[in-house]
Length: 112
Image (cartoon, rainbow, N blue to C red; front, side):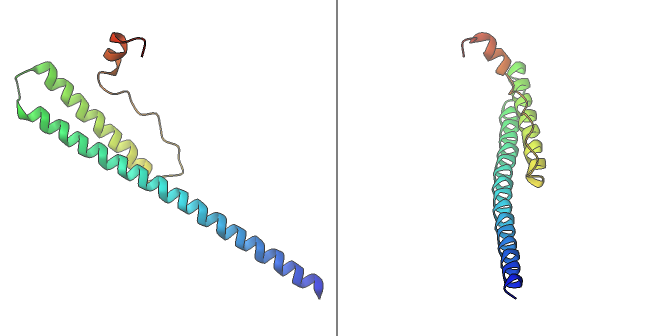
C-alpha cells in the first residue's frame, strides 16, 4: 500500500513540473510574439513614412527620391520578416538585410 502512494506522488510531481514547464515555455513564446508584433508594426509604419516623405516633393532630387523608395522597400521587407516571425515564435529570426546606404557609409568610414 505504501508503494502505491509513493508512485502516485511521483506522478503528481511529474505532472506539476511538466505543467510548470509548459507554462514557462508559453510565456516565453508570448514575449517573442509580442516583440515580433511590435517590430513588424514599426517596420510597416516606417515604410509608410518613407513613402510619404518621397511623395512630398516628387522630381526635385531623383537620387534622394530613389533612396527614399529603397528605404520604404527595406522597411517593408523587415515588416514581412517580423510578421512571419510573429506567427512562428519558436523559429530563430533570419539575419535582416542591410539598410540602404549602409555600404556607402561603411566605405566612407571604414574604422566604424
